[in-house]
Amino acid sequence: MHIIVCIKQVPNTTDVRIDPLTNTLIREGVESVINPFDAYAIEEAVRLKERLGGKVTVLTMGPPQAESALREAVSLGCDEAVLLSDRKFAGSDTWATSYTLAAAIRKIGAFDVILCGKQASDGDTAQVGPGISTHLDIPQVTYVKKIAEISADKALVERMTEEGYDTVETPLPCLLTVVKEINTPRLPSLKGMMRAKSVKITKWTADDIGAEPESLGLDGSPTRVIKIFTPEPRKGGELLKGDTADVAAELVELLKDIAA
Image (cartoon, rainbow, N blue to C red; front, side):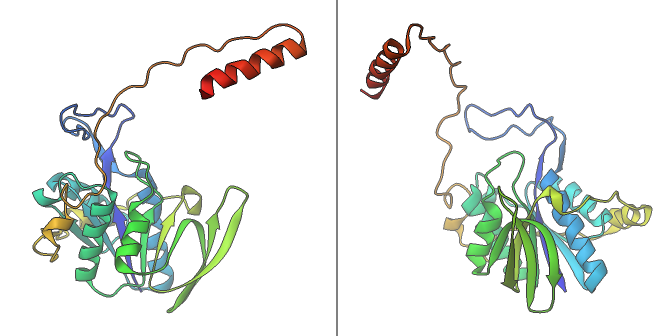
């Protein structure tokens, strides 16, 4: 079985700063880590490999320093690693990012399952995983909390909902986005850390994956961040006093003024 895990390197801080000129994250001087939700995808991929055999390929798009995230993934049990790094990818929104990752997956070749964390901690959109499945035209199941059964041609998974969970059967190949309830990520082993230091990271540019230039970066992004600002503090509410009838009448008038 061939499992591909898509990960992202994100700032290791809650104090995210935005460049007011470009409206993009300021990453300089900020420690970066594997997106926490992606750690569960890595763990689940390694568990599937241990149960069923095969290999795990980890894939990320980012600047050259994202290589450190790939090496960490290898230390946790992934077999091969691919870094997509090119200035042409700069400014990609979730659609352009998912297009780029899908193009790289096509180049990687045959696979059975793609695993992603449910969302990235720096964007919280939960759109890249579904976007990849759309570009590849394969089925997807989001918010997976358990892979109950998996065979050569189908998988039975439990998908978390607000009320509980749904049991979903999907044909393979497919894409699954996972939640933290699915497992407990392991720590890297000494053997894994030694292998991570020497593993060869495959590095691809836009030309290597045959991507269409107009579908990359800002040019390929249908959404743009136009303005970022801090909302004004909410003003305190007004307390209405009096008997019930008077308060109700006054409230109706206030609501009319708001709606006007």
